[in-house]
Amino acid sequence: MTDLLIENLAEIATPRGTTPRRGAEQAAVARLRAGSNGSDGSGVEILCRDGRLAFVGSRSERERLWGELPGVPRLDGRRGTAVPGFVDGHTHLPWAGSREDEFVQRLAGRSYQEIAAAGGGILQTVRATRAADAPALLELALGRLGWMLSCGTTTAEAKSGYGLSLGAELKQLEAIRAAALAQPVELVPTLLAAHEVPEEYRHRRDAYLDLVCEEIVPAAAARGLARFCDVFCEKSVFSAAESRRVLEAGRRHGLLPRLHADEFVDSGGALLAAELGALSADHLMAVSPAGIEALAAAGVTALLLPGTSFFLAKRIYAPARRLIAAGVPVALGTDCNPGSSYTESLPTIAQLAVFELGLSIEEALTAVTLNPACTLGLGSEIGSLEAGKRADVVVLDAPNLLHLAYHYGVNPVRSVIKAGREVYRAGNLAAAAGPPASRIHQGNGT
Image (cartoon, rainbow, N blue to C red; front, side, top):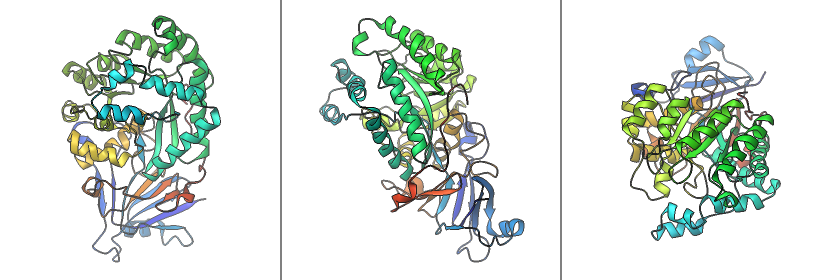
């Protein structure tokens, strides 16, 4: 039996439930607070037992139910705030190469689309990723995961999409599997072979779609390398009809649909996500009123990526307030990638969501915990601090939840607990070495 008592906390803040929070519920965050000094028995604590949450509440109630717990290891919360482990619902984790040259071009006024049309953008990363061997790709992914962990991410979705060939896509997915086994952050893999049309198929789009649907999707599913199938549904990339073909192929092989939708223009992506019952529709900077209505009716989560608008110096962000008012659950992700959102920090994304999307701090917390957990099919396991769920906890160096946005521009994470074990402590990266257990979600819904 492995126990850990997280004590001396000033506050515990968490959404509750196992399904996506929407509308007013998105802001319904429970905040359990200690007394003025915690010495009178009114402190708040978390008890982890065998990797799960056994108790979340006041010290006096814990003592009544569990006694003094002699010999149980203790983690001093140092009057910080405990929140659920952060869940990053959208990343492009394994890639090689760098695109700072394009970044400078954008600063000088060239658009993302102009750079891509000239052979840069995604295709530049494809060339570098194809050239990298498997050990190099794994090393690069592990470096990014170290940053994610230090910023409080305990679970992340991870996409392929920089291979765009059978061998290179499988190489990326295998790197995700290897990375999941080598460090604590839990990874949920997504096949994104329909991220762009590769150069060798530039004038044979249908042939590339045949390759994706008839070879890459079946191979990834048969090897258990992916749980989801994604597609970049955008006017200059894949149409709604082409996207439907890819996602239906994925579904035939047990891969659940999610998609990049309506990022630059209204491409019909939100409508397609609603039609297919996708786990999420991501980006949505250009979503239409009809798309919002369809997402609400279908119960599809809007996974918003404000880091992309910020990094691309866009003045337009996804309409988060309209989505919440319509009853669409809202989640957040970093969109960690080399071209349009190079960050591993979910606290930074939560701050952007407050300042630019208009979310309250409570709504932002739900959007980086429970709601993205549900888009990954893990709402019954993670995303909130409730007895019986997995013991994934982040202790913030903050006296209360409000400092998550109030004290901006810093990393607020003091300690990260994964499955009941401390795996990161600020200033002590060695604590993060090695996973508590194998945590990769494989294909066919497992």
